[in-house]
Amino acid sequence: MKTIYLLLILAIANFNPFTAQGQQRLQSHKSGNPLDMASHPKIIALDSAIKNGQFKNINSILVAQDGVTLYEKYYNGYAEASHHDTRSATKSITGMLIGLAIENGFIPSEKEPVAAYFEDQQPFLNPDPRKHEITIEDLLTMSATLECDDDNQFSRGNEERMYLIEDYYRFFLDLPIRGYAGFATKPEELPFGRSFSYCTAGTVLLGGILERSTGMKLEDFADRYLFQPLGIENVKWQITPMGSPMTGGGLGLKSRDYLKLAMLMQHEGQWQGKQLLSQDWVRKSATPQVFVRDFQGSKYQYGYLLWLQDLGPDDSYPTFYMSGNGGSKIAVIPELSLSVVITSSMYGSFQGHLQSQEILSDYLINAVLDHNPKQEK
Image (cartoon, rainbow, N blue to C red; front, side):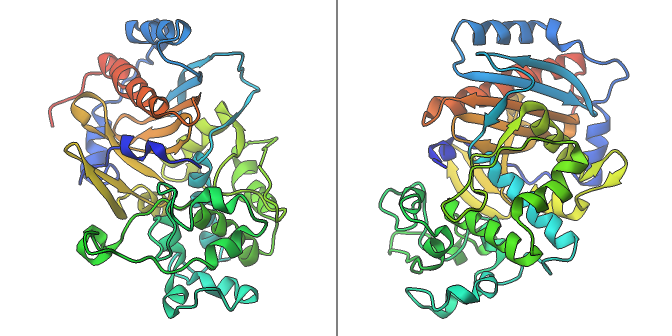
């Protein structure tokens, strides 16, 4: 989906919330007394700001800590049973499905070459041996070597060009290799040896890999291995011209469903005492895998189809989250044992992401910290 919001997303620092140090700091925030969030002055002010239009097109806000829902509020006619189109937040769910396919033996690892799953599509246009070296991990980290950039209207791989044709898989596989002008920074000159380029078409291809590796319809695989164990029902996929679910964006879920997915990631893949998604996959997904850019003194990085950002006072709380056009964010702040859902439909607007970031940092996190002040690091 549209990724104008890229310049909004700050990066996670070198701190890893899943390390022993991070867990020790996390424990320091736990309290035996649940927070009455709705009566907190910050939340009362937030509710007023949404109702009077200071924050626009906010449709729901849910907050859970240690698996307990602290706050749930709906706006603009939305309710508990409403589905929300969070656009590119779908990509992060696709990342979870890839992890489940690996864990259940359908895919050997994320290091597998993509071309091996599309022998029926060969030969590709713009032939190059480097196309056969592109891996699943390259797609998960938005760093494949093909010329695909949703932020560049002139890019051959821009998603708007994909939507005009029928075969989305072929669209991606036929792209030429990306070149680097003399003024451009090359992958080998960047941290992690990867060059970030936001590419919806690559995430769509992951859906094809899931279907071809599992021998199942993607929606059936997702239901069996992810949604049913979480108690998520009545899922609304967007369908591509090929008849397959769109894994690059547009999945419709209820806000409580998104909260379950956030809590699954917050608990490192555990759900009701069962290891549903491997701990290793969650940790790799929420760890920086590719450098995006420095912007206004901040470092942007990306995991496995997850955004990484420091939030809260002085940007001191490492956070990973799903994000989509319109301003929707499904976030996890591990140090605070916090899972947050903000659904927003300010589509195509830079402001949509700015206000969601403000809500997270200045209202929700601060309300939790007021209840349980942060210890000195």
